[in-house]
Amino acid sequence: MSPRSPYSGLPQRAFWRGGVAGAPAFPPDLYRPKFPVTQDTRVFTAGSCFAQHVGAAMKAAGIQVIDAEPARRGLPPETAKRFGYGVYSARFGNLYTVKQFRQLVDELNGAKPALPVWERDGRFWDAQRPGVEPDGLASPDIVAEMRTQHLAAVTEAFAQADMIVFTLGLTEAWEHTESGTVYPTAPGTIAGTFDADVFHFANYGVADILEDFTALEESLSDLNPDLKWLLTVSPVPLAATASGQHVLPATVRSKSVLRTVCDMLCDSSDRIDYFPSYELATSPAHTTSPFAGDLRSVRPEIVAQIMQCFLQAHDLCEEGAEQPEECATNADPSDEAICEDILLDAFAPDAPK
Amino acid sequence: MKIAVDPERRKVAVVGTSNIGAIKYAEAQIAAEHPSLKVTCFGLPGGKFDGAHTMDSQFGPDRADHGAMKLARRVNGAPTIDLMAFDHILVIGDTLGMPHTLWTAASYDIADWPSRTGRQLLSEPAFRAAVTEAIATRADHLRSQFADRPIHVALAPYPTTAVVPKGEHHQMPYAAMATHPEAARIQTLFNDALTRILSDRHMTFVPQPSETIASPFLTKEPYGHGSMDFRNEGRLLDDHRHMNADFGASLFRAFALALTQDTAAPQNQEG
Image (tube, rainbow over the protein chains, first blue to last red):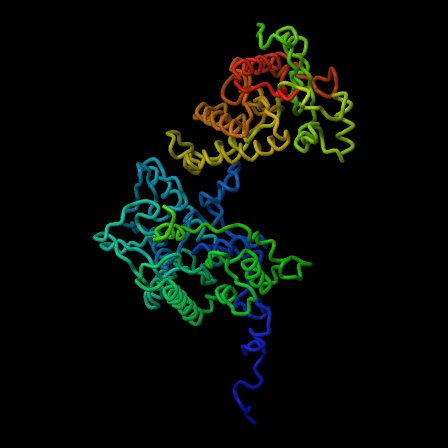
């Protein structure tokens, strides 16, 4: 006899009441991994600034997070972090868009980004990762020399990896009009100069991102055919939008597109999984705001519990750490992520001059 | 050489790690050269010194560490020293970020400098930031140990050139500095940063006297011969990390010279 309704007999997790309303903000069965992550899994981490928390939690759980440009002996921890050491699997800084990630891999295969060096006050920045050298470098030649070393390290990191953990952060970006080269920050934010005849604003849609991801995945398959992917969407709202919309709908548009892309990619491949950090951060089940006073940064204890959900799903919490807080404290949630996009806040009309 | 500091005899406390031994064993020479200064030494082994602090003007080891208190009493005649009883305090022994600086310098090629050895590149701003962080971390600790007392600070001496060759005394990262093409530049950068960071915290840096330095971050080998254990009278160390009485006398001369240049008011104005 067929059931009365297709919903009858479904588990509690299928219903808002009991699944969210009346349930913990971090329900233990929210995330069911497609494939296991173990302490032996060699993980390559990249993405928008929220990805820094993911990498840190994985390291703390003993997962082999690849670091192809580690801070060498002597380099103190705060300096190392400020200069991009140990933040991701190499010193590429935040990769906010899939196109930026694709471009990095294309560069390993010989492509040359346009306008690779930006200048300000006699100092020079790698336009593809301006945040990792906050004070710039002495000459364009040094920028080029350091980039060559960096790309060799990135290649090595990809070759070692079993899995890429990538946090999708933004759909908005600035491109070099003639070549299509994309940059992690708008020209003129950290360095360089904005020229509307040279650069244009782009707001990627689902089709654009799927195309970029497909190309990225294909390129990486050449380097490492067995790679798996774990995708997340950053819950951190846009610091600013150049889309002409109010920043709130612009944020929802951006996150919706990224979330849709993740679902489509997950559905398309057994080697691609999605971890719902976005949903865990923005769930209405939180009794207090998951965001800090700026309504943008996710509170450290929320980040810790999000990552605890991930680790628990993979049986990677330490023995005896039964309470979410106990397990999550390993993730060092007090560490603040380094995000260049917050620099845009300085351009707000009411920003202190 | 006699340096007149003040018409009245002023009291000086030399406080620090095992490295105060060089001053302690130079006591007679110092007394002869600086009759206007009366010196009292107070030393603790490095680890115990690191945990020492000031309570009600008394500097000493963790009061709950009975072993350290007992050792301090045996070596110094008292478990603590009253800092208010002295006009000047010279602190010797912390390396103040020097090992971090040297390890970083030995681990990377600094991108902005001409030499290349095939190591990973580190930008000069990152190197400067590393030096600053390494020094500031230790300087903050040192400042907190001595409450708000103005102090003069001398680094633990550079080890002697005997640590360069492989063998009994070999010691990295100092050995690496013997052949580092940028060692002189690193030493200048480190000393400038150290002077500034200490000064920001109301501490005065007393650099190691140039007459004792063989090359950047290395002391002339003869100063390592005859070094003695500050805890046990007459026990020879000769480890080339601790220095002898000649070194102590030279360092004290540099300190006394710094006092003459010091524009700071005497510390016991309140009485």
